[in-house]
Length: 139
Image 1 (cartoon, rainbow, N blue to C red):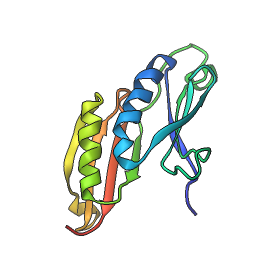
Image 2: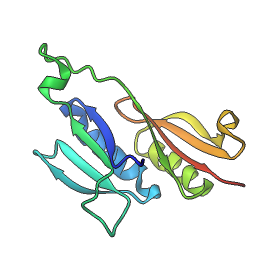
Image 3: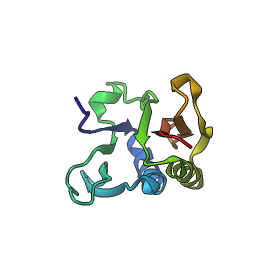
């Protein structure tokens, strides 16, 4: 079974920074923002220009219900991995994500613990989520 879509939720105040970050950081992977609604608090990204309404990555503001009755904005950080087409694309993602304001959480390189051909890079987004681009391929 393939996951159809996923995403992150964050405090509404972080949505603009995260949308800007993902617009720039995911561009090397072919992603672009294709829709937004609820006053730009819900934003969808896709890497398939043939299916612009088939969003597979969402950046959304946390609802009052999801952050609790006290109104706190505590949202746990998460990890998400995007599959790249090759190692050069992993490197381009890492560079673009850092230029977009992300923080290095693992430079591009082989991650032997996942196999000899697992090549990945990790960046923390402005909300602290660990975002990975990876490919399982030869040199």
